[in-house]
Length: 143
Image 1: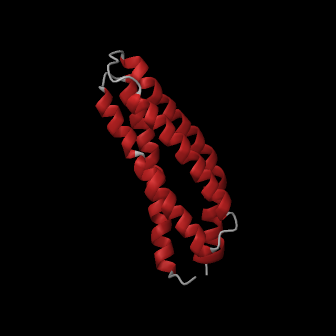
Image 2: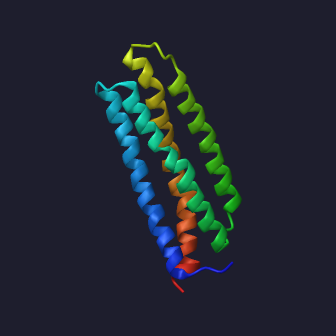
């Protein structure tokens, strides 16, 4: 595949910024659940993660594909797994009980989502994402 080194560096930089944004989003969800906020505030924070499971995954997979990353299929499967978990938890949070007034139960799903994302990210960033970034730096960007 044809690509320009500058384009790859831009995608690489964008992915790094997205990782930081995702970490911040998770922290914001935890904070919103520990302070008295209404369901709509938390839901808005949860929906900020939609960008992660759409744009970020697409960017990573595109980058992996154009540079010939040998573990592209594993990366896609890992992303697909997380998408399924994210959408299931988001659905449960959104439709838990529209009449529920007890904040702690409404937050239960948001905290579960944030914790799941935090744990998954720790593993994913240390394995496939790191391998992709190392592959890119060793095989493409250093040349």
